[in-house]
Amino acid sequence: MLESVDTPAARFLEEVARGELPPQQDQELRNLQHKYNKHGHHWGMDKNASFRVNAAAYAQTLIDHKNNPDTEVSFGTFRGATPVIHYFNPITGLWLGVFADSTISRLATFMLDDDQVRDLDEKGDVRREREIM
Image 1 (cartoon, rainbow, N blue to C red):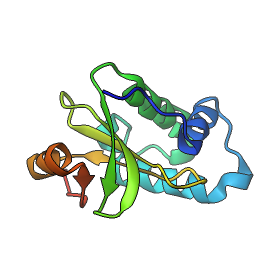
Image 2: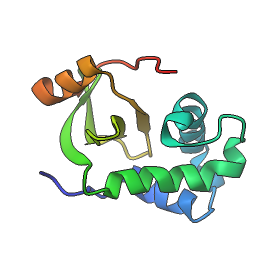
Image 3: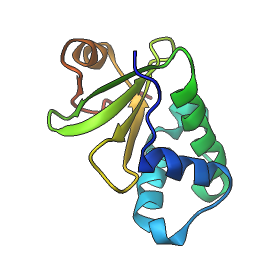
């Protein structure tokens, strides 16, 4: 099993968790906000709370997931093509994908369904998001 990997996204999450919302990383903040709005409730975030209020808590939740001893770390792909570092916790079903080929801090976060877990195990790939209410 791989250990956690230092990437621009990992460093970005650390900054946000400390309460720093760097304006020079506006694209990364928009990406993180999109993930928060769409999937934050899977990670224990209040659906009704704003991203600006919960950005640090959300980033810390993702860091905690990444560092959790139950989280499995592997290299693979996202949607069949994009190199990604997978952080999947089989106990919670939560997945964090950190884009490995990027100098920016791109992330994908959601809960995997059974087909996605099988694809991750067999092919090292997460192909699509699924809507879990």
